[in-house]
Image (tube, rainbow, N blue to C red):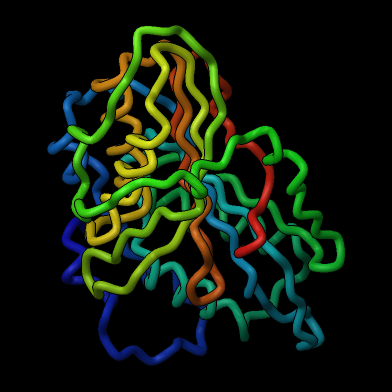
Length: 274
């Protein structure tokens, strides 16, 4: 259940023509969290939002139907789901007949909740009704034009510098890159950070985010690592870290972590790369 190398990730795989929840491969969150500076009591709440752009099934007459699906996994769930197994599972629905979309939603929620060990919420949307909501992200100050030297490409919290001045800021960067810990494939993301507390030196923050460039880790753990480093190094009194990753195989993963004074639900917007 917990070793990603035993999953189908990175291996040649046949796509199932039959619906099969057994394809889902859970990964124990606690194994990665053991390297972070907190115990079993989490210092944050939040959720992982997966967006499925290739969700399809058959109606009772065999006609294909399609939808965009949002999957909300609680950050406190026992397990996360290995991404390839999730894609294979969704594809196993392609030739299954369902009486209506509500039944599809109920099926997805049950299967995913069973695998994650917590209640997973699923929302199905018509493709024609999608609104990117990009205006919600315009309050963030982008760091990407800062003239900085970057020569550290493994996560390095020592790069982070702070001043004593107390501020509240919303910052973003489109330069976050990490890599799949099993296949080594690059994962690209825009990251959105809001915080209150000591002013974080903007150049140092950008250098720190770029230092993930050769890091091999899961999306969720990268965000939790950034959250933990900012809390430890910058003594934030309030903090949220939200990464919007570009999709692969019809799915994007968007981890959000926040201190308890902030909403546990992630902001609702998409980036141009999504």
